[in-house]
Length: 258
Ligand SMILES: NC(=O)c1ccc[n+]([C@@H]2O[C@H](COP(=O)([O-])OP(=O)(O)OC[C@H]3O[C@@H](n4cnc5c(N)ncnc54)[C@H](O)[C@@H]3O)[C@@H](O)[C@H]2O)c1
Image (cartoon, rainbow, N blue to C red; front, side, top):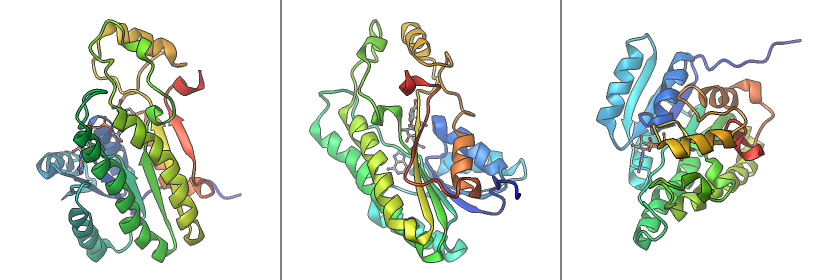
């Protein structure tokens, strides 16, 4: 019996938002996997720094400019990458814009959020997934959130200034779960798989009462760190997950299972 193939060696993979909390760890783990990695976000200078750090270890990482809120920017990145590499093997939709800072934040910030996190996300599937479909292979991994699966747990935030939740985030993180099913069905006949990961909260020096309550609510008793998401992303990008599509996998230390 053949061994499952977890390798990403020489696969061309695009990761959006490769300098953020989860994104920096994903960039490091994908770069170390032997893939040709492309990082793309609005802040290309920051990404160039990440690429330089990873390339110093002998990896192959490029930094590209992308504003996911602007179709012309998505189309331009698509054209540059298509000319250089042809169809991508993998796309990780990790970038997120968080314009709303609370429940009663201005409605135009909700629309701004949708431009990037809904319209832009759909277009990333259309442009890059379309190439993959024509090539007859590929894997798209969306980074959703546990906050797309469940509502806010206000009791976690008592005694902190963190409890004012932005409704846009719960809307588009819920939306990406079913957008994943939509594109899994649409691209499935062309052997392009689309899956969604729902990470839990990332440890970022949050206030103590929140940390204690949040950790107690997980089964593993802790928040996520920068190495917790990479294994699931690599698995879903690789041929080892060849029969998995349309799925949402929580990566949350058991938070949503409790
Ligand atoms: N941090 C958490 O606790 C947490 C929990 C669950 C899920 N997530 C999800 O993980 C992913 C990464 O989150 P994070 O906390 O690391 O985010 P972050 O805010 O640290 O980084 C977000 C990245 O997205 C990029 N970005 C924002 N707007 C963009 C645009 N218009 N075009 C292109 N790039 C743009 C930014 O430049 C940045 O690199 C997101 O999808 C987020 O929803 C995060």
